[in-house]
Length: 166
Image (tube, rainbow, N blue to C red; front, side, top):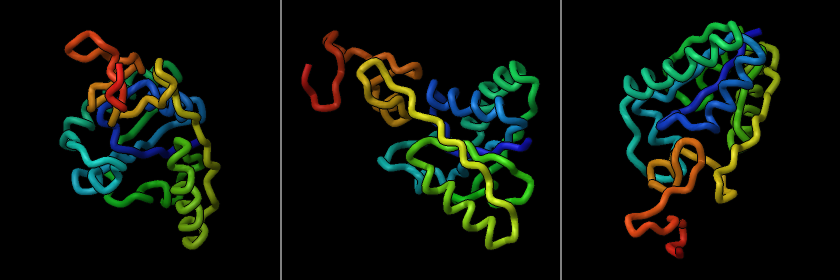
């Protein structure tokens, strides 16, 4: 089976790893990695995104170890548009997070328009940080949590919270 998934993956965190593991359980994986032009358009919050080549290298390192565990192969391709690679014929599954499920439905609409079978959309639940909120790259970049969801302390040794309380 051939599995597609896509994202910016900057930085990669345990929530992403959960997506990758589910994808490799299903088959060989093709990851669409957002281009430098597309990445800022896919952010819910404006923030710096590292260049494509840096993100690709880090993503490849993550995928290599997981692919080996499942005896699967993977490919990383550039995503130039949000619906990207999954609208192409050879895929069977699309692995998404809850907030990108609607995008998966749009991808299936495009596939039907092109005469392809729809993909089975597999929604992987969010992974929660120690504070109960989701693990996200934006929270990591802001210094709220680390890649594993551990809440970080500010310079005064207080637990950092989004509302500024300690």
